[in-house]
Structures are given as C-alpha cells and as structure tokens.
Amino acid sequence: MTQSERQKFLIERLIAEQPRYSNLAIPRSEAERKNFLRSLFNIRMPKETDEDFLKIQNEYLRKEIAGKGVTDITDLTPVADGIYLWQGDITTLKCGAIVNAANSQMLGCFVPCHGCIDNVIHTYAGVQLRLECARIMKEQGHKEQTGGAKITSAYNLPCDYVIHTVGPIVRGALSETDKSLLASCYRSCLEIADKNDVKSIAFCCISTGEFHFPNDKAAEIAVKTVKEYRERTESKNEVIFNVFKDVDHEIYRKLLGKY
Image (cartoon, rainbow, N blue to C red; front, side, top):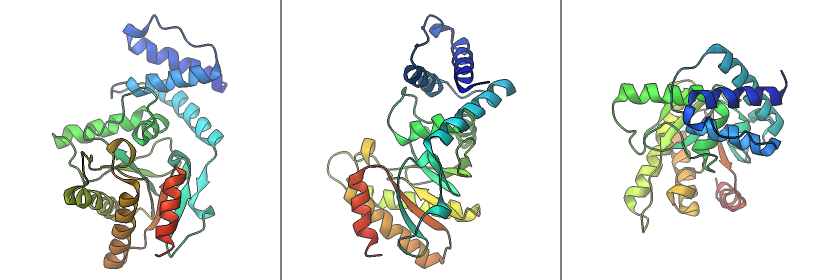
C-alpha cells in the first residue's frame, strides 16, 4: 500500500465513523488531503478502533515522521554536562521522553490543524494517545492540576514516552503564582521521568504562546529549575531544551551560556 493509499483509507474510515461529515468532499491536492486527514484525527473523540485501522495509521504516521527527518539525541552536542539546546520539531526527536504542554482536559487539542504543540504531538502519535489519556483522566476523576505531570506511551513518535504537563495561563501581569506553577511543571516532569527510569527528556517552551507566559521569564524559570533539580537530586537524566522559534533559541542560548 502506498502512502497515498494509506491516506485515502484513513480518511474514508474516519469519515465513516462520523456520518455528519459524509457529505464532505475529499480534497484533490496532496497538501489539502494531508491537512484534511489531520483535521479528522484532531476532532476524533477517544475511542477504540480495529487492528486494520491501527496498522495502516501507524505505517502512515511513521512514514510521515521519517519524511520530516528524525534527530537522535546521540547526534546532539551538549552545551553543558547533560544539557542540550535543540531547535526543531519535537515530534521528530528520538530520546527518552518529550514534554507536551497539555490543557487541563489532558485529551489533546480538538481544533483542526491548530498550531499548538498539544495538537501536533497527538496528531503524529496517533489515536491511541488520546485514548490512553482519556483512560488516565477517567481513573483520576477530575481535570489535571496545573504544575503536575502524567506519563504515557509515545506510540508512533520516535521517543519512548510523552510526559504531559499543564502550565499556568497568564492573565494580565505575571504573578509569583504563575512563576511557581511553571517551576512545578518542570520539577514534576523531571520527577516522573526519573521515577520511570527515563534517561533523557526534551522540554518544549511550556506555557509560552497560547498560555501567554513571557518567553524570557519562562526560559529563566526552566533553566533555573532544571539546574536546581539536577544539583539537588544528582539526577543523571539528560535534558534537552527544545525550541521552535528563533527568539526562543536566542534566549536559551544566552541563558545556557552561563550554565
């Protein structure tokens, strides 16, 4: 089966699951079909599916990720002992765990093709990730608290695990509570990584962007919290600060130069 055939199969199956979309025309262009499929993944509620769907979905997503190019942590050069700075798409990073900046529902982003990291991670991990998150939340019985962390499998991503954390949403002026909660996100992720014997963890820029935490202050808290945790616990877990935007790369480059 070709990638286009896999794509067509998945689109048809996802539309069949949701009859209200049965009148939608499948786009003709490759780029439009790719976004159409991603949108169908994004709006799908957490539920079981059959092995045929999962097999073809997994093949499709792994080929898509491979096409973007996978970066292995072993190919990176540390900026300090056990500390890395890497700019790129976190869904293409092969390491122990990547961190997802989740929302309190912890089910991923349901907005079709949204640009948040929560959306892209759930898209390329596959429908299994939303289902696992739903099981965790059902067992927990309440929304995820800001500053905590949960760990799941990574499914089709090249990393081993995804660690989900809910960062603070900044409304108005940055408060001490906002700062404390963001620091808690980093500590919680590091703790759950060590607890699960994860040897390396890649942090995204938690709470920046959609959650409006100032980029420079968020980076300062991230670096300070990681440094203090490693010194206090003597953790050997390797830490990657993953950035996507040039502005964040410059901020972290300057901060880590003082590490």
